[in-house]
Amino acid sequence: GIQVEQSPPDLILQEGANSTLRCNFSDSVNNLQWFHQNPWGQLINLFYIPSGTKQNGRLSATTVATERYSLLYISSSQTTDSGVYFCAVDETSGSRLTFGEGTQLTVNP
Amino acid sequence: SQTIHQWPATLVQPVGSPLSLECTVEGTSNPNLYWYRQAAGRGLQLLFYSVGIGQISSEVPQNLSASRPQDRQFILSSKKLLLSDSGFYLCAWRYWAGELFFGEGSRLTVL
Image (cartoon, rainbow over all chains, first blue to last red; front, side):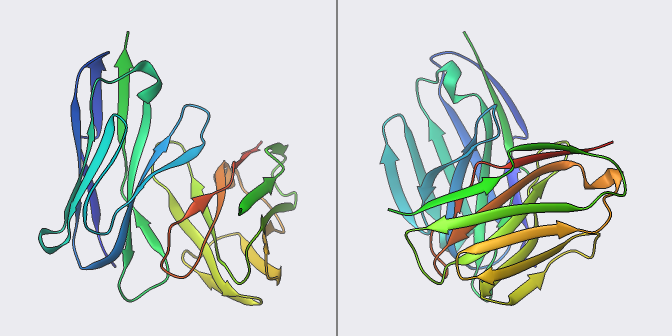
């Protein structure tokens, strides 16, 4: 099956800093999603982005499908951005999403 | 609009006891339904998915089973829980190859 790798595994920032999270995948995909899991375990949809660039407030994402990677940008980070960020990809041949291991983000005040 | 609910939110069960987690989706028809587990640590492991009533695909051989008795209902079960079944269980839905949406999760502790 498809392999999904996220980096870095852990990231610690001071409030106000910017960051870039990366997701690499090993094969062609139908679509790609970014999620944020908050400290209470809830998984929140950030972006549904099979290709191109999208922005939502301080967050933006870019997927370059031909080069098999996606980037999640967080600007002016806030303590509420803390949690785990997951990338998930949908294989072209299947009906299931495969998740990366996530990036644990800690934003300190 | 579509919503997804799963219950119970938290449960503590003894080893060897049965399990039933339920998930329902509202405001949609013929969704794909999924059960994921998140053990200690971060990764989400796909356990089962279903593309229709009575159609279940199992991803990992284990002590669990899934059923889809109705179009918008997905149930995760076990006849006898093991310690290793502890974890955070998440139900999710989407239209074919569309955006995936998760329920609130069920935290299971097996003692």
